[in-house]
Image 1 (cartoon, rainbow, N blue to C red):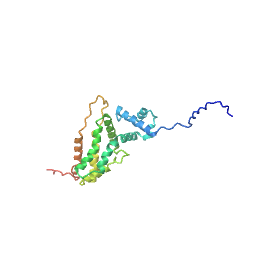
Image 2 (image 1 turned 30 degrees about the vertical axis):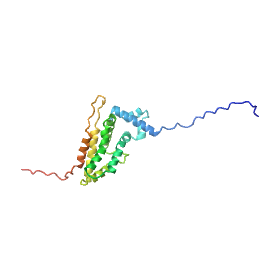
Image 3 (image 1 turned 135 degrees about the horizontal axis):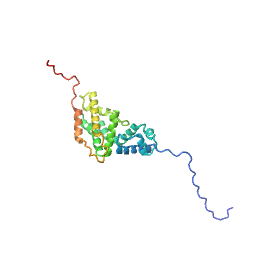
Length: 235
């Protein structure tokens, strides 16, 4: 029987430490660390001067982190460009390709404007110019579009151009679109000065000039594919 003396309750014991290995790092956060590290290094050193080893070290991760999460340096670059650039074009290009309006030169101008405007916005900042350079280096070297985007290929643009310019052949439309995009990459993605602090502000053409120039090229009459006429030999 109790003796009637009050007793203090026993304190709640501390929980036993969990057994087993520590939880693995979140792959998404690790990828973000690598992408952030790559972006910092591209800005500091230039897009052609950054190795996979440097990115891993900058992120504070083991030497195999980039290959584990992205497969290669190209995979890392593609992921960075996709994250930073695709949203800039997405809405514009969907509007221009899914709701193109009445066929004709104005429809072509609308499409060209949707493609050029993000470049014009990007090159106004050092970070944007770095991304344009990285895009140009990647696309021109690989000669193919980025993966992971429904509009990265040429088909949506060629369909719009084919409807707007029915007198052009399929081959002519494809060639003109390739020329347009190559011109944009060469214009906005040219190499940057290694010493950005002391270099003069880079020059880029005005947006209306670029749009008018490219629209004129796309809407020009189709050139003759036959042999050029030869001047008779007077002898």
